[in-house]
Length: 439
Ligand SMILES: Cc1cc2nc3c(=O)[nH]c(=O)nc-3n(C[C@H](O)[C@H](O)[C@H](O)COP(=O)(O)OP(=O)(O)OC[C@H]3O[C@@H](n4cnc5c(N)ncnc54)[C@H](O)[C@@H]3O)c2cc1C
Image (cartoon, rainbow, N blue to C red; front, side, top):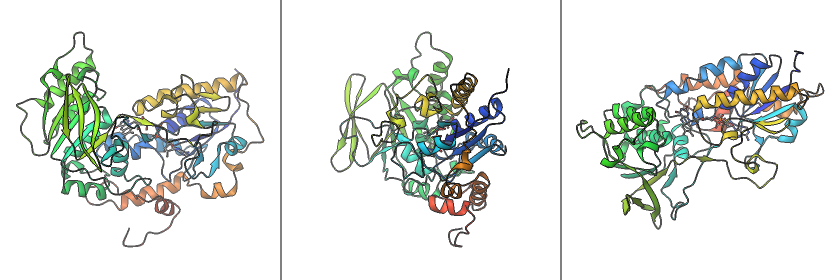
């Protein structure tokens, strides 16, 4: 088989999807030149800013990706926003990238909380789970302060992100040992934690999205007292292994003989449909249909955890938001591809992005093989971009300076203290010293 041309490829986004794609391309096109752009000064997307701070074992996947960036043909270009949707102050347009790279791949994820379209859905006190987890993860786009939650918190959804939020609400200080939680958000919450928490799952236990392991983890914590409707624990006939394990985990969590640990009272409602959020100036409750009966559940805050969306588009028909949500193919048109959540929609855990990226890499290789995608010796990749972009881009070595700074300044009991300010992150990465008081 004749050797394949070695393209210069721009990957927009350095989350799991971008990193897995780069891994696949390095293997199948050893001579290719890859640049992973990210609008943030730090790589790794939701690994850093979505995955819960007390799940450091999951975040450890970054060790694998660090090895990727050690390859001479893989470059990180942080703090460079590509204009995909026109909603972010961009540094480079898609057209500019295409001028200098043989192919461009969107691995931009989907980071906005999906809104629950019920009356009252936009009342103050209704908070998206993504927004909340970004605060806890010190995301530079988010205000540092945790939204006011109060004593009665309702969580809409029972997927893994909802269960991450529940775990946060239930845990005490000790639960954050060796985490990288933003203490500026955690401390005010622990000073005035939720007393009563209600989970509203539209699905029954059999079809709830949360992994059995996530319910088991809650059961293993010596915190909180849990109840659920007895009918929720009926195992449907012919239930598969995951369903059986989930029902068993919820039964363990809500068992009447589970010791009465300190912490909030948690009620899990399955088959519950929120009809309306009550309140005038702020949410005060959720009207819900449950087992054919309409009930009002008091709420000082409602956290919606029903999935994610793209950021609102500026209406430019060429942008990514204008494309169909999930697509079986990564090719948008020859030379322009997408992978990860930007391709499949906001579904699936980190490992699923690996298989997705592999299939997109195969599409790119196939396009090169049959000439659909041509390489152009007149394109110089990152080296062809204007000096203002090249000078701005934070390299992987510069990110490692920021990484080392965050680890070195970790407070007692923390593995790192993330800087929550974009400008400051970029300055530290570029070698600036922090004023003593902030270091
Ligand atoms: C709250 C939350 C918790 C989660 N917890 C877990 C978990 O515990 N375990 C698990 O396996 N999975 C978890 N997931 C799922 C996992 O995070 C996703 O499967 C994965 O991150 C999707 O990868 P991605 O690369 O497509 O998107 P992302 O991780 O979102 O990465 C996209 C990257 O693109 C960058 N970007 C976006 N737009 C631009 C632009 N215009 N220019 C330049 N850069 C841009 C972003 O800054 C970001 O770095 C969680 C998800 C969420 C939301």
